[in-house]
Length: 407
Image (tube, rainbow, N blue to C red; front, top):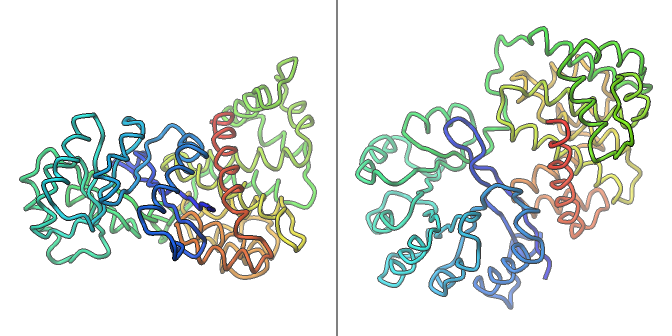
């Protein structure tokens, strides 16, 4: 049985990463096989996810929020999972009953964190609230006019944290904050916060100039050196990276010129683009840069899998720059106009058109758990959908490793 898995971040009120919800399917068609019921599928997928692949490969050191059917809850399947690493999500289809209350009580006594999915403020589901630690509310499905009153009524459960999911904009994030939600999930992170009358500060203009240099057809290492050397933070990142276990050099490098020469043109493009982007994203949630890195590596890996020739370095930049507007809170078209990008890159970033666009569209669809749409984009590129999960896990591992060396 093939397993397709992605993760979606959950943030706290300071937009720090709290956990990842694990999204999984048994096929790219977002449907269970006809011969397999949901309990069997969940069991099989959990075996793949937790034992064959491993939690560390999926969520790193962060917690995983995983949903369970009623049968799995009553069969005590969650106790096979590490209590400090997993949050047990009770599906909205599970109705209150003495056996369900008992199962929740046992899990809580054993130290597990429980979450109630898709709570819609009805009295029947509310009976489960005292049995859990976190309650999820779908902000798109909720009645906005009654949401303030409904949340006010929920203050009678002081020990419960509330999670707003499907937040699509910063306006919705601010609304959820004002209503007292503690955790937040959705696509608001990868969208610009403000698009009007925003200018780029001087330090970030220097970084954009540096990005412009590595985007040129031929990299001028002396120009790169002149831009990097005065920047203490970038120089430190460069030395930390070149002297890391990734390269295992016998002697430590302490010269910017030597470090750039050792990396070579391809290595300089990759390091500088990542390091500059990480500096640009300072003040933003760290998950934004991590997601950019995953996209960059995943787009590059997909370039090697299709039946059409594709420039991996261009696709790396496509993934990395795909969130530049959210990092700088400016329109993408305005930012790409400042960089010497190819027409193919500009069209893919600005309009999601052209031959490079399906790579980014496939990656974005996959990370949202829209596996059917992802499969359609992959087929356009001549890439077997089955290859995506291996590439995705490789991109997660690479991003964790690279993030540690330049962080």
